[in-house]
Image (tube, rainbow, N blue to C red; front, side, top):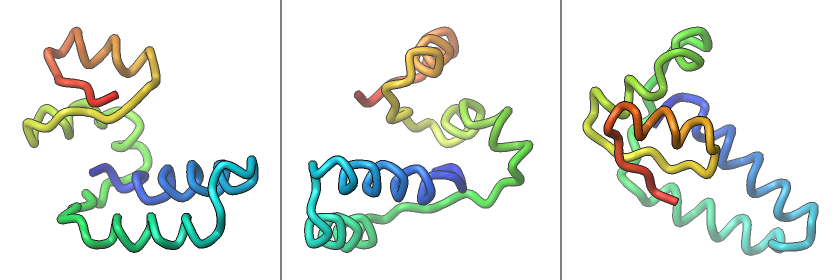
Length: 84
């Protein structure tokens, strides 16, 4: 995963909690589940993250998890799988 992944996950969980879609207990439980996953966070510079997230997925041979239509379009052009 790109280095920004933990920040993105935290942002999504915080937004869900603020919108009352997720309780604090649910957020904590979800984080504990995530910590059990065999996730490897690639430590990249911010500049490289901005320009090479697709390249990271391609290099690792992994699908992208996104709902961003621009990223989906770029992934399709690069023959990458998408998890929606």
